[in-house]
Length: 337
Image (cartoon, rainbow, N blue to C red; front, side):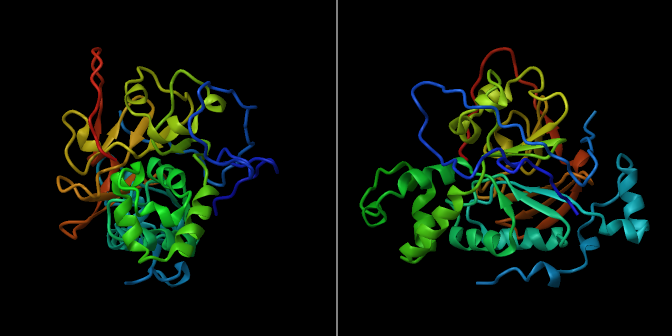
């Protein structure tokens, strides 16, 4: 089972109990370094790139159901399918931006079929745009899945000051960015909204797994980890994507936030590889794509469910990833997330 040994005052997610989201300060204040001691129960594994509720995990199908198909570039996958005992090794899943698509998430979880020892982590943007944000949040809390704060959760936390007045604020940035759909999913249950916001406030902005580093949007390449602002971790795009060298030398950054088909030449549904990072937001709410993606880090698999076609599929990572090579001339990506 995946386990962590951490300093008692810090944790693998890079925040302490007293932390809370704040608007971006006028001047960057460098906090004290937060460097937790992390020991993962799984060995490092490099990416090879040269109205239902989900049943409790104890009642879910055999984890071997969700195994990646064998490919010539992934011979170890063939071994997994032949050696039945290997099918029960713990896996680490990272799930892209859900954006309120509860039914699609249920179908994705069904094909993933996570077991009790598997780690399931979301990169944020659980809410907005889709019809069932309240159910998505309830599901994560029910199953004990982990999540990061995304820019949409940050907008929600900034918006919820006076709940009763929010409906009259047509120009609220959160409402304009899909918050109306989130409000509708609660059917006027203000108490439940407040409870979910409190739960969101307790979630971290990044997670360090030793060989992988999870964050919603990316990092500002000009600053060290302990100098990063919450705003950058949730919102950054171009400066991060155009890095010429990896930010980390010993780990891969996994992100969501920017829909992958907005990168030049990338097909809808594929994930994107850059310099030391991998983007898995495949645009579940967008009619050009509709794919919700989960990445199995330890078996190099992509699990996907489509919100429009109802299709599901499992791909070897090597069959569903495209590289992004930024041009020397600065061109901003135009994407909604």
